[in-house]
Image (cartoon, rainbow, N blue to C red):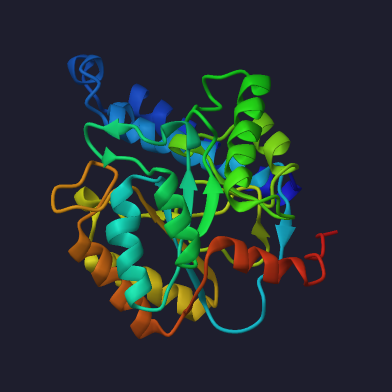
Length: 300
């Protein structure tokens, strides 16, 4: 972790502590303090603040940096867990527009059904996915969190998931992974990042050089929070920055789970991407192109 990053993080924490002390010591009645209705004691505000601190810390450590290829903006569509609708609906939309995506499959979910997201993939869908030009990555085997499992158990499950995918795709020099629930820890990031080609999280934003292959940024497409104008602005910013924008979702249906979106919402994003003239590639192809470039220079 470089000195400038530590300084920025400390400044944020110090500012939060100063505002909290000010709230406790000035201008608030005992009753208002005890009710915990102040901005910094609202549970959601505190959760967002702690989440922001966590994302900054984890984004700054155990990094494996590379430079993006020269040229225009890049966009990738990804799907987590791999509900069947992600391929039958989402994959069909991408294919009809000449695009392909990356599917992060938790292989232990194969053949099972979620009450919210519907049925998961089967062996036949995996063959269809690859035949249609999509990419198959992993999401651990049992869809476990590195925050609740021991590092050794988590690592073993990640490798079990990787091996299960490779029994379908064949052994390949590269492999791509997404953290279940978006949960990342310092130790897991270092351990898993050293064994896989890329690891995608759920911290939002645009990936710009130097990109951290151990924790790629990604932006959700969830029905409950979907805002067309916000997506349009994000795609526009990616074009201006010539960065790499990654989207992710789970199931697609007219009544999706909390972690999915409707076909109409997904198709509207695809149309915005087409209008932006960005290059749409699976995650692995972007990483492979970057791997052929010289390493990103370290700051002195």
